[in-house]
Length: 613
Image (spheres, rainbow, N blue to C red):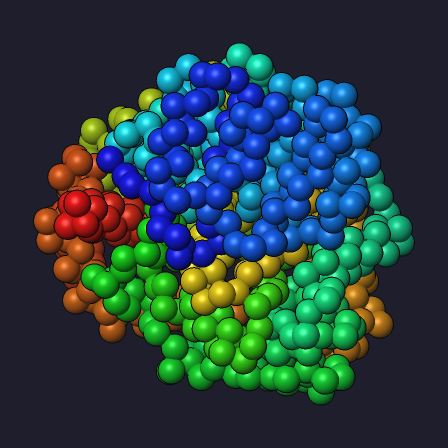
């Protein structure tokens, strides 16, 4: 059983209660913890938790109250008139589509409640039935604490999949009795305390030509950055690849002092610092700092000392000190807002799987793109054509993926025209774990719909969801330094503007991220827009495994995953004792390590609770 997050844990947390008497016991359980509270218009408890001053904006009119939590430009003066126009929770669809930034939107309307996060999942909404009421929260472990819930080991087994679990399993909480909203849905709570997910958002049709799409994307990203920069004396930014470079250049257009940080890699081919210096030379007033690669904590370093509490296994657990290196420096230099380029790859590089639709709508363009991608891969033409002509639905692909969990991973040169990369379980997964995961995938395959009608958009949205959940946890880490860790590419309006651009304009083998290049002309220095390289971090992972082998081997001793019957610790130990086989990607090891670390942090927390008692 898990306890509540402590008061110093990053951006805090909140719980949302329905407007009914049956929620009173939950409110009573929370009130003994010295929490903050916002009431329903009826006077009943509504929002309870811990949040920093100014984190919530509240507007009220009659029997309607609206709260916005996060990074936004909404003021109480503006929320009041909006509340005055709202008669039902569904009426908030319009205001929700107009909001810039990244936030939770929560409303109490005549006894009904709406709880909404962000499209990408950077702002998540969890829910659980507690007593006679459905309760929502922005952290899964908070609901688990209220429920007295234990870890769901079947769902935890799914987290061993690499590169990650497929939709819809990837985002499921690892606590019994706790559920999460899917993409594009809000939670509606009625006056009797019952809850149901409601679909309110669908991805835009990708029909906008580049000539219109680039200015629209420029406007959306500019507004997203301006929301974070406005009114601040100083902000900090990552300055590495083209995505973070664009965010930094947009921040530099404001009045705030901009402090940029570039982490140099150990890989001799890493050229982030070289490009960052060129960018800074073309911008006015940006203060630039570099972090030498050999001064940064290594991947896998300090595994036995990880004590950070997350509400799910998270890749940031492998190297929290490495994740915190830049935020700590930024905080020391006076920044309270840090802008990052996370999310740009998923949105701007895009997925070649769009060719599956293009071959049916624009065959000449599709054939040209296919030849280019196949040459770069290089892709085997036979397999590329098989994927291109295959019209299997997502459910069929998902069921097939469940049958192949222990197969050899697809080669690096495999075409990427299907519904995704078929996930694999590592060789140290036990037969029981394999069967558990397979059954969950087969069950999901009976009813699941893809995130979008076309394969390309589905792959992009799936990647946005998976990666944003990791960045959400990095944001929690950074919160301990006093920083807000902002990722504008995960904002709803930015995602919509990017996905609306025609895939034949946005995704091409002959240009690197053409949408951001066209959108940032005149903002990012011209020379920086010619960059087509990116440091992908495999050199650091390999060096970290070599140098920190003792840390990895120590995790194999008295493994908590082995205790749960999910892995064979001896098999894992043998694998960690040498270089990874060519057929085994680092992702396979990452997923297992973070699941093991996460279970151990729960034990530490329980021990602390016992000692405190």
